[in-house]
Amino acid sequence: MADWHAEDLAWGHGPKLFEMFLEPTCPYSVRAFGKVKALRALAGEDKVTVKIRLQSQPWHLYSGVIVRCILAASTLPEGREAAWRVMEAVAAHREEFEFTHHATGPNRQATPDDIIARIEGYSGVALAAAFDIPDLDKAIKWQCKYARQNGIHVSPTFMVGGLVQADLGSGDDVSVWAERLMVAG
Image 1 (tube, rainbow, N blue to C red):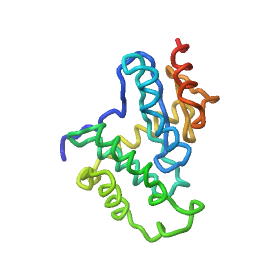
Image 2 (spheres, one colour):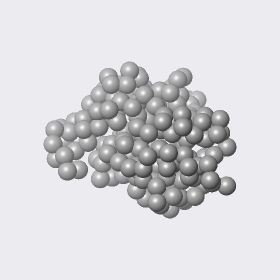
Image 3 (tube, rainbow, N blue to C red):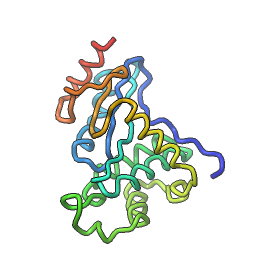
């Protein structure tokens, strides 16, 4: 794939911006990801834009592989919808992509190719060829740089209108998130 583009992981088309920095296998990020559709429905697709920013974390040992899978999926013809299906698949089968206590368990025997095959099987997205895009790391590095520029180091972290919201968390009801969006300038 000489000519590729990683599609922005954004849903909705409203002026209020809600950015979620998520690590795909983090249980708290998975909980937050599970609320995205409800937030969009409650706040209104025409009032809010939800952007998912991928926050790879090294203690989730396959984090880099999974983040690359999501971004690889975003380069496919179905773009962000393919990436969404990959994120849903990982969230639904989180323990099959994570280590017990971040260090042990059956995933120690898994290879990156095993992880890619699992994701393809659960999501129905054929992404192995896109995973091999030589300079896909540019999209991954952009995600990292953007997070660092905004002082974000862990997931989940939320930004409203470009400002970090340290008091918002994955345990909040979506009504709390929607209210914050509506009062933001």
